[in-house]
Image (cartoon, rainbow, N blue to C red; front, top):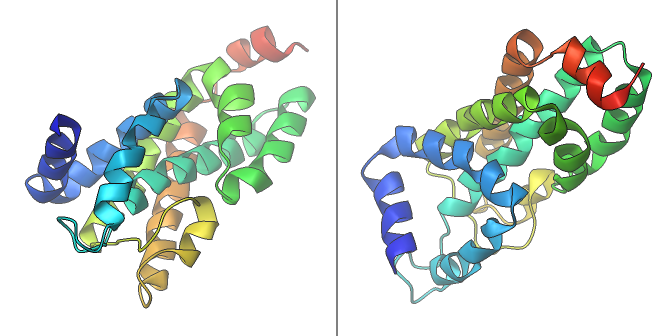
Amino acid sequence: TTIFAILDFAYNKLGVFGGYILATGFLPLVSVGLHQALTPIHVLLNDPEGPTKGINYLLPILMMAGGGQVGAGIALYIKTKNQKLKNMTRDALPVGILGIGEPLMYAVTLPLGKPFLTACLGSGIGGFLAALFHLGTISQGVSGLFGLLIVVPGTWIYFIIAMLGAYIGGFVLTYFFGVDDERIEEIYGE
């Protein structure tokens, strides 16, 4: 398929830069539900008879998008004085860490705009590292820290390092460039 060819090109020909691009571009796909279109690709990659002998190199990179969001959420929580935003972020962070990013995305980063962008760009750090470490999964269906359950056995520490990279990337970019107090007041009120 064409989608597989594009993803394969990004990973195999662009290397760590491809990992950065794939992770950075994933949250916009999730925000409109198009990430579901990648399910057949994940099935193909996890097929032991498939082109990668059952190791899905794409999923660990894409999982980093959630890490960028978590980092952005932590930065917003620390920096904002708006109590409503603080409460929403506090409530969305634990499930975001576990791989369910929709509450953080739809209630916090996406409505504010800039934090969504900085989360995307920050997640690229995790994607870069996931590609650098050649991370792969042996299954699919979970994300976030639960990704530890499906990464190739023995690569857990590299997965944690990549996810921390995404957290830090999302945090730093959001803390310094993604917090717009006027926009926060406009969206969440006083």
